[in-house]
Each structure stands twice: as C-alpha cells, then as structure tokens.
Amino acid sequence: MMPTFSRLAAAAVTSLGLACPAWAAPAIWEIRDDDSAIWVFGSFHVLPSGTTWRTELFNQILADADQVTFEADVRPSAVAEVSAEAFVRGIYTDGTLLTAALSPELEAELRDKAAAISLPMGSILAMRPWMATNTITLQALLAEGYDAQGVEFVLQPELADERLDFLESGAQQLDVLSGAPEDEQVAMLTATLEQLDTLPKLMDKMLDSWLAGTPEELGDLFLMEMGGFEEVFLERLIYARNRNWIAPLEAMLAQDRENLVIVGAAHLIGDGSVLDLLEKAGYGVERIQ
Image 1 (tube, rainbow, N blue to C red):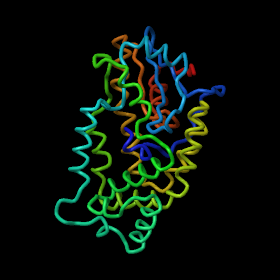
Image 2 (cartoon, rainbow, N blue to C red):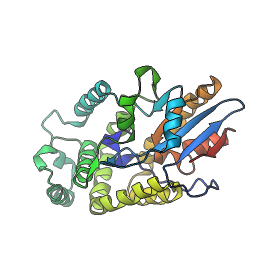
Image 3 (tube, rainbow, N blue to C red):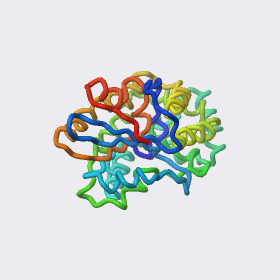
C-alpha cells in the first residue's frame, strides 16, 4: 500500500524459490510473453531520508518505459483526497472513544506505548482501531528517521501525468483497512503494540535486505513482522490484491505496453505473489537486478 499503510503492507510469505544470485540493489524482474515485456520493481514505501537506491539500470528502465504503473495515485491532489476519505472512515462521529473497544490491559499498553513515541493519547482517542494502528506505526517510524514518502513519492514529480497509471484506487486501498470488522481491527492494534519496541530494528533489517537485493531474506522478515495478524486480513491486504492485479498486467503485455510496474516488495515474494501468479500463468519471469 501507500506510505500511510506501510507496515500493514508486509505479508506472511514464503520464498518464491527462484534461483537467483545476490544483487547489491533492490530487485527488478522482467516479465515476458512471446513478443513484449514489462518490468516489475519491488518498492519500499517508507525510507530514511537520503537513502540511495536508484541504479543505472533502474533509471534506464524508467526513462524507456511507456508508462509507470504504481499501486495507486500518489499525486498531491489524490493524496489529499484519500487522506480526507481516511479521516471520514477512521474517526468516530458519535462520541465513541477508541478505548471503548479495548480491554483495560490493552488500553494501559496503548497509553504506555503512545507515551514512549511522544504521541499524545488525545490525538488518537477518536480514531477507530485501524486508523490508530497506522498512526502509531507511522509515528514510531518517523521518530526513527524514516520518511513517509518512499519510492513512489520520489518518482512521481519526475513523471508527466500521461505516463502514470495505477492498479487500484485510494478508496480500494482504504477498503482493506476500514472494511475490517472491529475485532479484527483490535487484533491489528494488539499485534502492533506487542511488536512496537522491535519495529524500528526490524524495519532497518528489512530495508537492508531490500537494498541488498535479497528478497528471500525480506520474506523471512515479513513473516516475523506479520506473525500476529489474522490470516483473513493478510488475504485481503496481500493475496486478493495480487490476484486483482494480474488482469491489468496481462493487458499491458497483450497491448505490447513496455511499462515499469512499481508495487510494494511484499507483493513480489512467495507463493501467491504477483510473480508467482504470472509464472504459473505461463509468462517468463526473469530477475534482471
């Protein structure tokens, strides 16, 4: 997902099993049918300021691509629109407080963890659990030097509107989180609070694996991070979206569109990943970086 939902974009996944050497750069794959190709790049949605990740090959592909396809629109107007919609969906409007959905033990832990990352409790009391989860996660990462604007935000200003394409809408992304039943949202919050102390170190390890071009290690770290989340949530967040993206990717190949497709790295690792689904559909999948 886009940066606001960066932590929740990780998945419980297993190694894809492709025989690849190690690459000291984020992974890029080439997907081919008989006469055309698209390139797929695994993104990191939040990055420490100043992170160097672009290579000559990436820049050449970016320059040559007919279009650059992101998960969703990250242009300022679109971000403002989805942020406003997130507020509508994520805030109680009937006077209910977040604490009403929590046990006394979970409320106490929430207060402790919010204080530890300098997040005023009053700023999240009116939030539904899913929005509180994302706010807490983002605050924790910002405190560690991460920037909410990752790969997509770096690239978007360089691209003319006519070169941009998107696999889904911001509203569809919000559906994944805001559509979860309350008990599932509370489970998300619980898992996040339990892992919050180790999140910065784990994110650093994931970033190192991404930069080093070792997606198999990245998969193991995703598995560790998402261990406390409900399988039904992971199905909506990762696997259902992967399946939804196959049709537009196949259409690009059928139309001989040489596009660069940029999606979160979690969508490109393991059984049920975008790469796995394309390979099973008969397309050639080759790692080129």
